[in-house]
Image 1 (cartoon, rainbow, N blue to C red):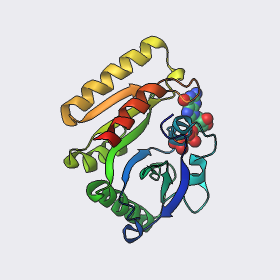
Image 2 (cartoon, rainbow, N blue to C red):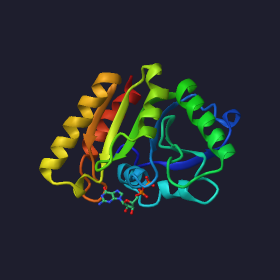
Image 3 (cartoon, rainbow, N blue to C red):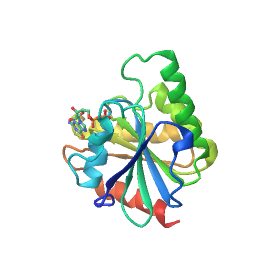
Length: 196
Ligand code: GDP
């Protein structure tokens, strides 16, 4: 597993606090409850790693994990769950959009989508912020164990087709944290970003 050695590094709530570590980052983002923490924990082979990010007071923050050789995983705040006050929402949008658009160390973005409800409006917003950078995006369609084989194949094909039109630098795969499906494929795609 790519992130096996991952250890909590820092938590950030303002752009000025982003660490100048000089290494490379990959960020994970997704709608709350889509299965982001489970996916991170599965890829890290580590049952509690990403739940660190769910510690009260950290859920709106960027949580950094280091996994050796100047490589970092960044767990971005989940979106679209509860109704948040407008000022919190505005701060969140500013932080996320600026991070995605300007972060030099960021070498790729992983977007977590529930395979049963892919490509929400917020998912598209996230992709729209990031696409101009030209950096790669990889979509994990999680909880694929909840779909039949036929449904998964169809969903994968549809999401691929929709993304191909607007986001040429985007790849998609099925994933399941419950069944540990798609782990090698995700490791290979994300791992390749650190080699470039
Ligand atoms: P997050 O809010 O995006 O971090 O989502 P979590 O990882 O906390 O998962 C939300 C819920 O979905 C939890 O009840 C998980 O047990 C469940 N879940 C996450 N991944 C999977 C999966 O691959 N298969 C199934 N069946 N359930 C999952």
